Image 1 (cartoon, rainbow, N blue to C red):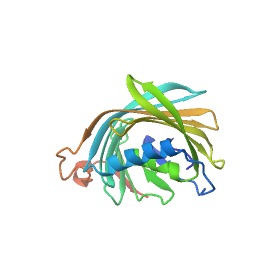
Image 2: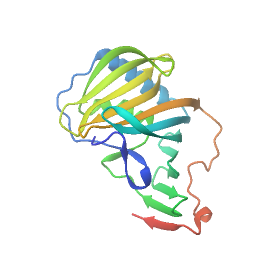
Image 3: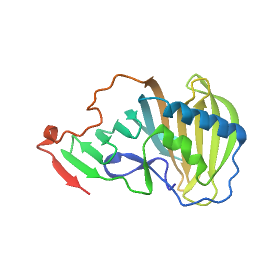
Image 4: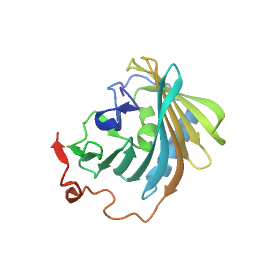
Length: 215
């Protein structure tokens, strides 16, 4: 996992994984919390939430961007920084209205898509996990869980904040070895909505004047 929050082409967020399966230390309470959140998400037909993506250095966020996210099982739609990204279960479509460009690609085998499930599942892959206790996040009581990589992968630590009552991830912080910080704060959850059957489809007829590049 090279970067939990990494901006790539057109500012889209993905998660890279590291091939590290050394002996781990996983706190039992942290595991119980994360597994409960994972089970909750997997039980839903679809999920929607708003989020704020923040970046900065020296543990201080200096820039933020709002975004929205829809998912249904392995499909999703993400909007952030003037870019829309659709994953239809097969290909990723990154759409920039400003550049009038669409980039089409298949997911890299070393990357996972932007999803709450990504974060709460990653602790199983090469991280020591520790429960740090109760904290308050934006007025909400949350359990704080720290992930520290077993091997050097460019990340110092990742903090997950879980709403135990609702079994939801509400915030994630990543502190990297290069002194950068990335934060996702999640809000306005909605579940099992009546979504359009075409929600996760890419309609090329809507982008006839766009430059389409297939990687």
